[in-house]
Image 1 (cartoon, one colour):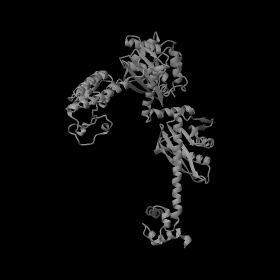
Image 2 (cartoon, one colour; image 1 turned 90 degrees about the vertical axis):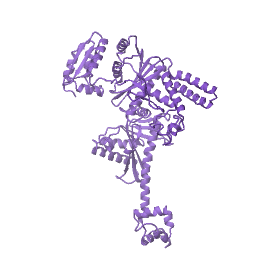
Image 3 (cartoon, one colour; image 1 turned 30 degrees about the vertical axis):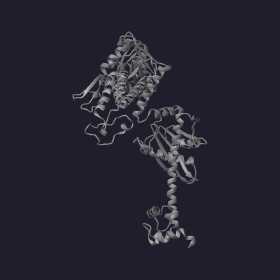
Image 4 (tube, helix red, strand yellow; image 1 turned 180 degrees about the horizontal axis):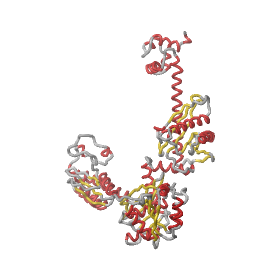
Amino acid sequence: MNPKLTELRKKAMALPLLPGVYIMHDKSGKIIYIGKAKALKNRVSQYFGSQNNHAEKVRRMVDNVDDFEYIITDSEFEALILECSLIKQHTPKYNILLKDDKGYSYIKISQGDWKKLSYTLQKQDDGAEYIGPYKSSYYVKSAVEEANKIFMLPTCSRKFPQDFRKARPCLNYHIKQCMAPCTGRVKLDDYKESLNQAIDFLKGGSSNSIKTLTAQMEQAAENLEFERAAKIRDKINSVKKMSDKQKVILSKILDQDIIAGFSDDGKTCFQVFRFEGGRLFDRESFVVDGVDLASEIEEFLLRYYTIRNDVPKSIAIDREFDSIESVEQWLSQKRGNKVSISVPQRGEQAQLVAMCRSNAAEALAQRKGATVREFGVLEELRETLGLDTLPKYIESYDISNLAGTENVAGMIVYKNGKPLKSAYRKFKIKGFDGQDDYASMAEVLTRRFDEYYKAEDSEEGFGKLPDLILLDGGKGQVAAVKQVLQNKNINVPLFGMVKDDKHRTRAVTGEGGEIAISSKRALFTFLSKMQDEVHRFAIGYHHSRRSKNTFKSSLTNIEGVGEVRARALLKYFRTIENISNADLHELENAPKMTKDTALSVYKYFHSDGQ
């Protein structure tokens, strides 16, 4: 904690209740944060009060503050203008700083007779032809990918005609996304026609392309070139399908930005959808530190439109913030006419905002190696169980035995919603004989957390604490393990998974009783799969130990037969029944057998007849 906290709070309490800008400095005098306030005293004093309600980013900033200064302004709007100017000038460490790395994008047409289409961020002096520049790399990338698919142009690294017939066509040929000039069966004139059609499509857009292609199709049909006309017809249909995909569900959108954020684990991802002329022409994704979306959204808007000159007349966001009117005024001044910010609650606009937020969640999930579906079910699990954090690392346990023999347990791990098989572990119950699932579960968890304290600094394997423990069982198992966690001073949420009469997970049980899980929810499927997986893993280990012991109790009990010789016998005769039915001569001729050992085996299986 900052040792100067009391001194800084005393100074903050002496500030005026006026709008202005505050500037935080560290010990070296460097500016580390700049903010604005409607009432300086109220805002700045919040930083130096209780730290319990602050986000982690704010706590880190406060720990590094040595002093602060302030500038009084006539209005909150003037404070906002000054804040933006100072942040742009000093780029403080703890403000959201967005890098303007958009640049321009180009469509590239390579050299030679068999030209290829691609997209690039830089125009080079390589003899290729370039179309552009375009301000949206997203648009260029999407357009070139669609053009190559529709007009079946190659996107591989093969060079033509050098690579004709050197290898089989790739997958794109078989799914009808490439005409496969690599086969050597495509005429150069046909290839050039498709290339030119693709270039016309990229230059003129889908509507002009459809007109041109329709005219070419009609001309081909008139010349009785029905096969060529059919190919052009297929291209027209592909262009129309692509155009339909580009149309957004909201026909009323003209020029508008949609902005939404998603936070987890100290990070926030903001997604921006940009619309122009009723179509999505660009999308951008930014990941920043911080999880307080209510305050981060305002700062993100200011930083984003500081690095963007083109401000739309309408912006839809996913949550409100206190200074919407001031930000609207600033954006209107930047644009030159009225800009409105809205938080849609229903209808098509709300659907677009939800779609934008889902994409933000997906982008954040991908950074952690998960999909948005997996991320979503973990969020549902967190809400259902009332957890403080997202359970990204889950351990699940199950016991398996047969009438108290071969007592074993299995531990499986789910990381980011997916099985992490490298972290699975097996346990043989050592503390007692007989059947006692509660004592077995307690022993397993005791050994698991004994290992944690031996390797707690490693942050992997047993050295990593889970975010959640799920047991296959009910209140009894939970109570037994709860005592272990308390004795070991382990603070990890603990629940049991209870099955119905069809062996499906019907509920999760904890100290507060059972929580029913609806069979129609994604969480039901997730927990059922996890319970099935831990059961499969535990019972698989149990079966392997039983098989091993059965094997030992028959062949390896015979004088002169060890594991190596027993395995050789099984491999040769296939089954123990075949070994028992073999005559002495057959046993003597088996691999790794001697006459004395063969006689011992024969007597073992034919003792009643001797």
